[in-house]
Amino acid sequence: MPGDHRRIRGPEESQPQLYAAGEGEAPAPRDPARLRPVYARAGLLSQAKGSAYLEAGGPKVLCAESGPRRAEGGERGGGSVGAGCEAPAALSGRLLCDFRRAPFSGRGRDAPPGGGEERELARALQESLEPVGRLGRYPRAQLEVSALLLGDGGSALAAPLTAAPLALADTGVETYDLVVGCSLSRAPAPAPAWLLEPTLLEEERAAAGLTVALMPVLKQVAGLLGSGEGGPTESWAEAMRLGFEGCQRLYPVLQQCSVQAAHRRGAAAPL
Image (cartoon, rainbow, N blue to C red):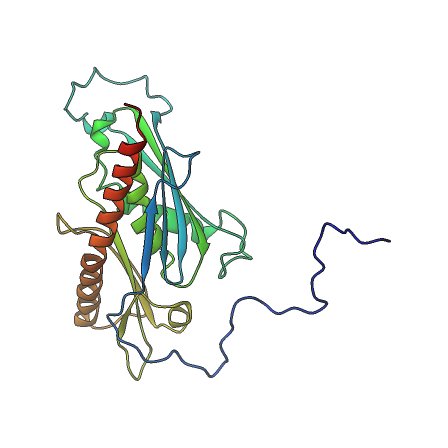
């Protein structure tokens, strides 16, 4: 049977693209407070009302936002809401979040779409984003945020936690602040130190993990998610302090990204 000349013939033998560390190999020593280089850009997707792309060393995530649109049953409810006023809690807008891993993202790529881990991360993403949005300004409306993890190099939840508020801001949704997420992992004994923004290998070998979401300007915690072995209270307090400091250090980069996106929208708007 003749071959298809439009296709590039691959090698007879191939190796996985992901580097697999040896069984006895341990993560290299590093500064526990190290932050990986961050690249963020808002407004990449023309099909979405708002979008943001974030790359933080290993993890790569693309977030898109649609809405506000009328929620199901939105026509039922109380009276109208005046301009500049927020609706009562019963009429306040709703925020829905969806988290997916791309088939080529790396860890968990063999898991079925919409599995238990993806639902858990989507729920954590939604709980952390709800405090930042002024949902009362969008009565009987629905905001939908979708996060697609393109590459998993560790800190899989912190990346969409940081990118999703940029997508909301790109849409023009009113928010109280941006949310910045940071992940940490605690190395096993004999040196149980917390590491900021762990790599995939460090996460796999960790005894415990913690993800924090902070609103830096308001200095309020938007979300906390911990797992693994327990430990002294002082150890977890140190992890939270390290995570909050990392969020504060990342905030200027995200603030600049949001301002640049606003300038691009203003320049592209018709006069």
